[in-house]
Image (tube, rainbow, N blue to C red; front, top):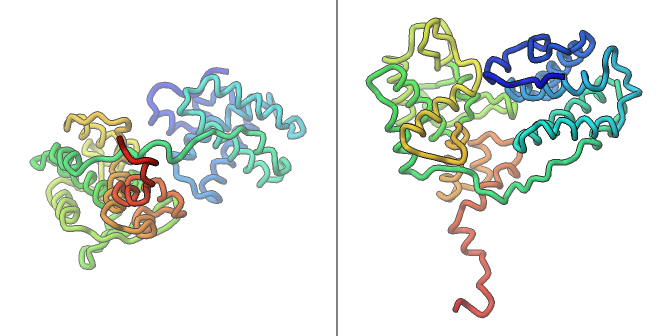
Length: 325
């Protein structure tokens, strides 16, 4: 079977299940993948981009397993492991985790539908990952300032991009949350921004800081194209639609980093989220407070920032036996 993918990632993500990326998918498999997509959205509440990452794996797995009508009696731990090993050989290392998570999720969906018995998902090997080995990529205050300063305030695009970067860096918003921001989410009188996260299915209200509020107001007054859309941020090329995917926000961030002369291990929008969280932790905020701002479901997720509070860590470090020589 030909490898699904390649080319422009945005175009691939927008293809339907029966598009060219899935040219060998049978009608039975296509219906299953469509039902799986609905399950991911309605039952699991996963974001659109996460679902789009999972669907190609699901289509390839089901197509590889079943030439025609699915025969669930043929599905066993050995066949699952065989597919994962085969697919892993085609994937670069960063893609292994998505592969394993997607197949495990698909098997849970098949259990949910009553097609297979529970437990088969354990046949999918675990991706060994040490969460606290590396430090989250984050910026210094000076690097944040340099990045913001690359946005020109004498044109519409610069005003829009500066407002976006401030939302990311000051409020620790996800890229998806930025493109989903609507006029009714901003309370100018109370000075708050309401954020509805599709990822965590939680709603949170954050303070609209002075610099963020000024940047937003300036963009809305002077930079935003005229449009009936209720989304705050629009493309500046006609017909001025809202952004389709959060990848557009990461592109804006990468461009700003490049203009600022920054070369980071990761150049996406999430760097600003890590930066804001790091600043809060090092400023004395509790993990609970940081988790509330970030919209984390579990405080364990926020725990990755503990190792960045160097002052607090130093206070618990044991002295070297015998002292230093």
